[in-house]
Image (cartoon, rainbow, N blue to C red; front, side, top):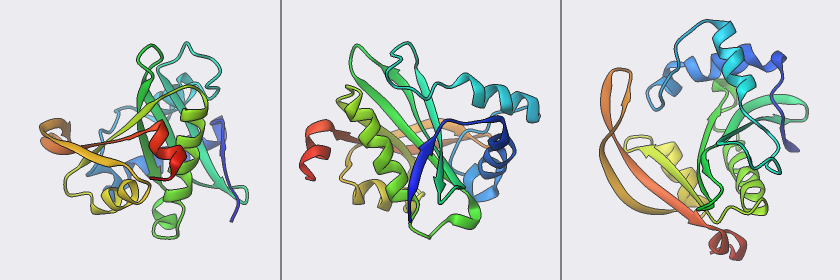
Amino acid sequence: MSLRLVKPEPRHVAEWRRWRTDPDSRRFMYLPAGGLDEWAAKLAEAKSDLADKTGELYRWIAEVDGQPVGSLSLSYVDWIQRFCEVGYVIAPEMRRKGHGRPMVAAGLDLGFASGLERIMAFICTDNDASVRLVEGLGFRREGLLRRHAIIEGERRDHYLYAILKEEWLSGA
């Protein structure tokens, strides 16, 4: 399996929207409104080159052997404090096939190589798959954020996870 993170292109919009609007995805993340044009604009507004330190949102499409399998983002990037939030979604038909871990690992590699020192993940407390994923990568649970975000019209509790650059590089 050869996973690559590539810059989103217009050809990815419909798939990205399908992944994010899937019922299993929607119950764990905020869902932007709008039609395909609005989704295309949202995908296009993100940067993909972390050498460009003017952005707060960077996004990639994960491909395995040329086939899109998910997307990964580094958002709320603070280049002064050197931290961000990681987000990801896997195509429904590609879940439980081992793509999530290498996709997020590739994002951590990119983020830490660009100068970030702390990467956080906010995960719904009932999202067992994401909890296992980030804990398996070495993230540490730092707290419970009560009623943190509105998802599907309901306030949801989230765990705050984070990994530091030195933890990632040491494999701790």
